[in-house]
Each structure stands twice: as C-alpha cells, then as structure tokens.
Image 1 (cartoon, helix red, strand yellow):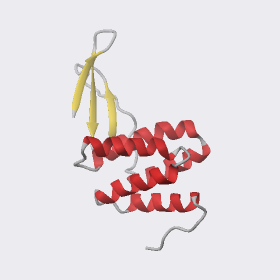
Image 2 (spheres, helix red, strand yellow; image 1 turned 135 degrees about the vertical axis):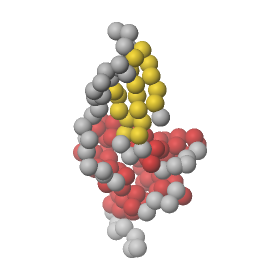
Image 3 (cartoon, helix red, strand yellow; image 1 turned 180 degrees about the vertical axis):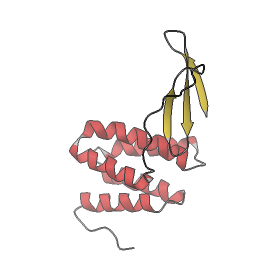
Length: 139
C-alpha cells in the first residue's frame, strides 16, 4: 500500500507499507535513490512481543512506542483482520500496562489464537504466569 502527501517544501513524499517490513518513509518520487530505514533480519511477531513486554517492566515509555509498532506489524502480518479485532488488540496492548494487565494479555492471546498464531499466544501465557506468580501452563 502506498500513500503520498506534500511536504512543507513542496516535495511529494511516499509512505510504503510492506508486509513484514514495517512502514518506510521514502523520498520524493523524482529521486532515483529511495531512502528507507535500515533492513534488519526478520524477527518473529512472538520475539518482538517478548521485547515489548520486557520493555514494559524496564522502560514503560519505550513500551508504548514498541507496542504501537508491534500492533502495526501484527495488523499487516495477520490478515484478514476486522477493524474491531485491530482496535481490540490495540486496546489490549494499552491495557497490559495497567492494573488489569493479565486480563488484557488474555484478550490479546485469544485474538492471536483466533488467527492461527502459536508462538505469540505462548509468549503471552508465559507473561501472564509470571505476573500471577505461577508457572506457564504445560503444552
């Protein structure tokens, strides 16, 4: 998916969203060399969510940015999603940081299971178990 907008200096900028790669802001279409953020090795949604949940405990401000980024990627990689599912996942991510975080993580886990994911629900199960002071359920 691409979109374009005029920048303050009159140049047109393109935003490109590519599955699995995240959004890229690129230069004016007239340039011959596109500028993108550096490529990184493909990281699974589960691994990225593990990082987000670690940030929640270590640096809540970074968690908010990482969670928004994870949600955007989740919406692209886990298709097809309804708007309600996308919004529910975003609300659950926001609520994970609150006093009912384990309930919110359970909602997100259910959405991931609904869409056939396996590793991401396991990450959430382990996080919920740690927060509740128990062990993760055996698989």
